[in-house]
Length: 385
Image 1: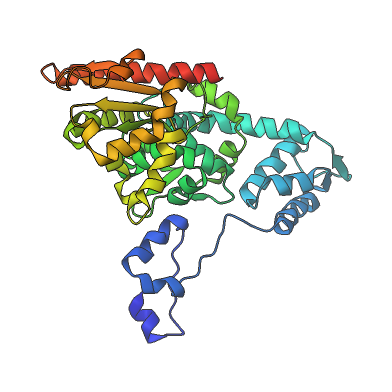
Image 2 (image 1 turned 45 degrees about the vertical axis):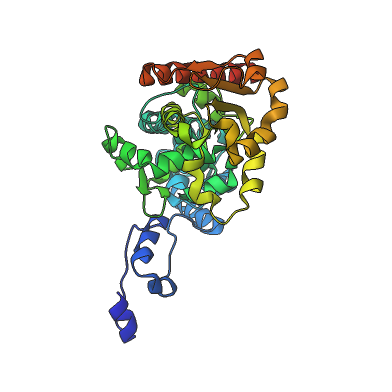
């Protein structure tokens, strides 16, 4: 492609059919192609062109559809969707062939929309449900897969840049970034349900762009009643007050415990601030300005790992200064280590927390703490509903 462009041949042209925004990965391998490529969007046609399509059908059938403007708007640039809606209106109006006398079809558009949606549901509900639940339904989790599907539905395009999406919806950044960066999203789409997703959804991990390939599936997800769908799928809510469910505060000597808590909580689709996971985002930032709001208010709870080195470290002292006023708000959860000096954290014993024994079974203790933290955040969400 580069050679043909450099030769400036006026007789040579390459057309790649079926590549939408996900094809941006081509540019990744040869960035100087970027200004030499034109993208022609087939999926979005002007409303007047959609109207022209409907009017051509009206002439052939010798009819007038009273809701053709609504059809044109509802199609959102898709000829295919316009044809589906028009066909259903004709069937509902008992127009099955060209009419001898001119006929005005006056079927309710809302009835037709519901009928088309129900018909599409037989083909696509299972696909939408399977994607929304992710590899395993965690009804009290952050539902990252459901949010990705929802963002696709409300997007004006058929493709969604997930990096841009999490900037737009920062409360879901942690959970969505995690499924992207750890390869969970790619593995899920290529896993047990690969055949189910293959005809509808494409994900390009190099560019983090997810796209919908089937206009019928686009129409279906754009017309889902999302509050109802959330409950049907099995989630309790998709509304969250904070960017993070938990923020971990700990000294470096207890990183093994912090890492284990983070990994296990993420598996449950709980949103956790863990410095190592956010390191690349902190680079070049004012660290104090970046961390302060997280410990003050952006995390619903702060989990403090009170090991022997906690009071000795500069950053733990800084972090504790940010959340110290939250002890009275029932939003700080201490974990007391048995190897910390007795009486070092006496003030914290007034509130409920966990004991961690360095001589005890590591995995068993982590699992018990994670189980309780998951139940805690689920209970809080239920109270907020």
